[in-house]
Image (cartoon, rainbow, N blue to C red):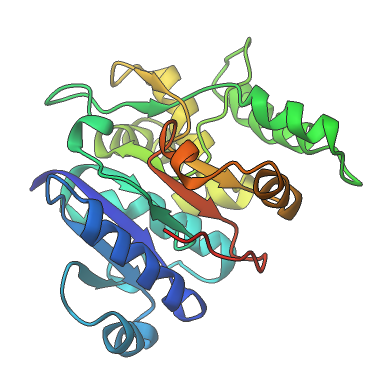
Length: 264
């Protein structure tokens, strides 16, 4: 079993985004961490055709979890990757992300046994959104989603964000959630996602509740552009790739928006 791996859940519409991600992993993966990609069985041929067969291991979603239909199904598969037994910890990364500089195991693991956990209040994002408001308040949905899970586990206090992706996850935490909460309550992980679709909040709040691992907080690993005006403003103010590299390992561009991909 690998101590650490990189994992991406994808599908046919994101195949060329994954190609960009794979190219960046190949270029910057300093410690040769194994890279797994899973897709629906029906998409295996397409991914092999576009990506080739080098630099990654291709898996079928159905071999990870069979309850993987639709958007919520993606959250289930990503969160159940630990059940493959392929690694003890993993970086769960989306198709619309790519690395922009060399990365190392030490970026994700504090020591041999303890991964970092993405855990922060994301104040910079909400500050930005207050300056350039949308028709809705993203903080309200953020707060509601997280308070629901906090209340289930009896936690009060600071509302944390355990994303955005890529996220660092430990099989120990997911296994503890299953054995100590899901199964005793006659639930499935699909039931949790059906009730609340924020898989990284389930992970983070259970880690705080169970203390199965020492929580070593870390801020976002990637510069994430959730909305087009974030991206356009950075381009306008010449927030270049070299500047982004000072703070982040990579960039995440929401695939639902037609951003111009950075020259990386």
